[in-house]
Every structure is written in C-alpha cells, then in structure tokens.
Amino acid sequence: MAKRPCHSSSENPNLPSCFSQMDHVLLSFLSLADSSPPVSLDLSFDRLLDSTPSDADQALLIDRAQVSVPSSSVPPIAPLVNVFSMLDSQSLCHAAATCWMFNKCAMDPLCYENIDLTTVVPKVNNAVVYTVIQRAGKSFRSLKLGIVPGPTSSPGSCEPLVYIFQNSVDVSSFSWNEKKTRQGKESLILTRTCLYPLSVDNGTAGALLRRLHLYNIERLDNTSLCMALAACRSLLDLEIVGLHVELRQTLMSVSSNCHLIERLFFESSKTGRDDSLKSLTCVDIVNNCPNLSSLSLRGFKIHDYKVRILVSGFRKLKYADFSTSYSITGTFLRNLGSVSGGNLLEVLILRDCMHLKEVEVARFLTAIIDGDFKFLQHLDISNREGLASEGDWYQRSYNSSIIPLQQVLEVRPNICLLAEFTSDGCDLNSEVSLPSQLSSHTSDGSLLMIREQLQ
Image (cartoon, rainbow, N blue to C red):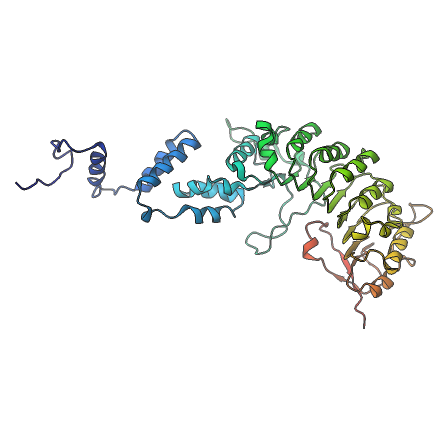
C-alpha cells in the first residue's frame, strides 16, 4: 500500500503516531516557508536572545543553536574570536549588538584580555568595569580606565593613538548634562570602588593583571588604590595620571605588593605640592622592585637626594622622567655615571624643572664628554622659564655660555639633545623633531632637537 504524503498539522491533524515532538516542530517550520512575509530565522533567533534574561542564558541558547545547526552552515567561531580580540572595548560592545553570531564571539574571554574603558567624557560606571572583568575570566591581563584628553591622531589614521598627559583633566569642569544619564539609569561616573573587582574572590582578577592605567578618576582615593594594588602581585606596568592620591602611599603599596613591576609612570594632579615622599620609601621600592627599567615621577616636589636614591639604586633603569618636578636642582647628577644604576640610562627627561641649575647641567654634559653615560640616547633639559643661576634661582639663564652643547654633539653625534629655553631657542642649528618611540612620554609642546651635522 502506498504511503500518504505528509501534510502540515493544520491541514491534516491525523499525523502518524510515530512522529516525535521534533518532527512536529520541523513540519511546522517547513509549512511557513511560503508564508508572506517570509520567515527570517536570524530575526527570530535575535528576538529569542533579546527575551533571554541574562548573559548566561543567552550563551546557553547560542550553544544549543550551534549544536543543532549543521557545522557546514555555521561560520567557524575561533577565527572570528581572534579578530574580535583585536577590537577596542567600545567597538566590541557595538559588534556584540549586531547579531547572535557576533554576540557569541564578543562574549569570549579572549576578547577581554586587554580592556580599554578610557573615554573623553564620563561614559563608564562601576557596573561596566565589573561586567567586563568578569567576562575576561582567566584571560584578564590589562585594564585602562578613566578620562583622557583625547587622541593626538584623527580617526581613520593608520598611526597608533598616542595619549598626551601634559596636564591632568579637571573632571569637575564637565557639565552636569555630560555627567548625568537618562532618567532611571545608573550614573556614568566611576566612584572610589571602581577597582573593587580586582580584589574580590581573594584577588583572583587582580592576580592576573599585568598592566593597569588609570586616568583622572576624581573619586579614587588612597585607600581604594592601595587595596587594588594589594591584589595586583603580578603587575608589570602601572600608569597613574591625575588621581588625587599621595605619592608616598602609592609607592609604599607598589613596594609591598608589585615586586615584578617594570614600568611606573605617575603624574601628579597637584603639580609641585605633593612632597610626601620619604627617603625610606625610596630605599624600600629600590630593594623590593629590582626589575624596574622605566620610572616617571612628574610634577612632584622631590629633592635631589631622593631622586639619586632612585636613579642610582635601580640596577636596570633605562628611562627616567622627572619633568615639572619642583625641587630638583640637578645635584643628583653629580658622579651619577660612576654608579651602576645611573650609568645605564638611555633616556633622561628633566623638562620644565623650575629649580634646575645651569651649573649642574654644565657639569653633567661635561661628564658625558668625558665618557660617562655611554648608553644615553635622549636628554631633555628644556625649560620655558630658563635655567636657574648658581647663586639665586630667581635669576634665569636662557642662552647659557657655560653649557657645552656643541662639544657634546661633537663627541656624541647620535645623541638626541633637547634644549628649548625660549621661543628664540639656542644659537646652534636646530630642527623640530620628536622620535616616535618617545612620543608617548613627552609633552605636546614643540621640541627643539639640537643635532649639529658635522662636516
């Protein structure tokens, strides 16, 4: 006897008893193939995702869909995840809202290995920070957070974005309309507990962190920062700009917890007013953080003998930046080339140090001529107010006759020597230039690179 053709359940409710529930679902779906308007599986699946209450339930639904659909019709996830992992955090969020496949890729922990939540105006709150760190899981390695002045390159440029931190951003200057959100929504302001996710679960997330950059978070205080650093025992790179935190307490916390640190960049939010650093703190961080190779302490009131402890103590130090430091006169440079720490310096930046003395700069350059500091490649002694005279720092020198610039360039023609004192500059031939590898560490003002071309 010939078998009867199958019909939809609406046309023929007497289907064979052997039909399973899945058979009925498939038959119902096929009966809609010629409907008007046509059925879109993607749209239906997106609606199901939108109706799902939590991220975990959404992930479960996506996993079930992938198991049910033949692998030949589903794009491979792994290559997409590799691409998504290269996106910045904001682009990742936009991609996640595109379709269920992109959402699946955007939920992969690898996409959150390097989290960048920096913005030009306040757009991020504590809940966002917690969510993305949780999504990162064991892949978590880097966190950038806070308010930045903005990139130096325009959107679409092939050059990497370089953020300049010559002056801290005053977040209080933003209007209330920029800070508040739509009625009923949580405020988009980071509070003092924004780094709390690093410390939860016995510091599980903090222990994974290698790089932490914090910019102009006005509510973050000493206690909150030190609590976060206590969890970051594998931290290699710490950058702090515009936070209302004390230098001494921060360095003490780094010294106690971050023994592997290699780079420390700290710019004061109160230029010339933080004189909290003690000699004992300098000794402790030198002894406890032996791998430090890059040190920037900008805008602090640090005396020469403390600077000398730091520069001469770190055995691997290659980069030192004390720009806009208030109390430095330059005496720490004396005989610095004879100690193992200072003699390894490749970059030294003393830009706009108000009390930097002309005579100390002259002694330092003479030491270079005599053969010290063989590894030094970049030196910045520029000062908008000129250099201080020996007897009275109120007397300023703008075109020194005792500083042997010409002789240094004759002995070390490959050194990059920056000596901008006024708009008129020095008498030597000069050209405006800035090595690209140093652009992220220097100010955005024009720089005079004095490089005499010897005949």
